[in-house]
Image (cartoon, rainbow, N blue to C red; front, side, top):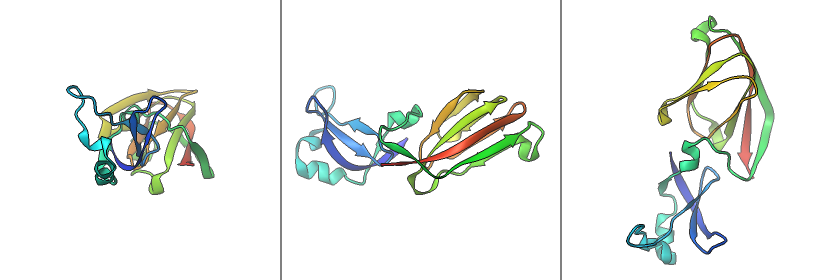
Length: 155
């Protein structure tokens, strides 16, 4: 997923990382001939990249960022059956204000659909799945389904 660069920093080994709007960091090394990013070694080059988008591989893998806190109101409980209205679907158009979502399944089974990632993932009891900000998704009940959707914000 493409995420905006908010700033830059260095990791423990001195390599440059981009701080992305999703809360993840992404290495932006300049190591020719394999990785050619000469703009990262100068302050003016890094400044020119602020606000530009960069691919976040961790969002693609639905990984949580390190610094995150549960948002209030705490969660939305749901219960669906495969025969419910909208074909047993629960849909979100993307979280507002950069909020992360967590889908927790307590009972039943479902499929998680994320069109932007081409992802269709089974969900079952005990699964907790992170959904990055601004990412539309659908939960399709395969059987009677009960769970929660929680919101989280970056700290």
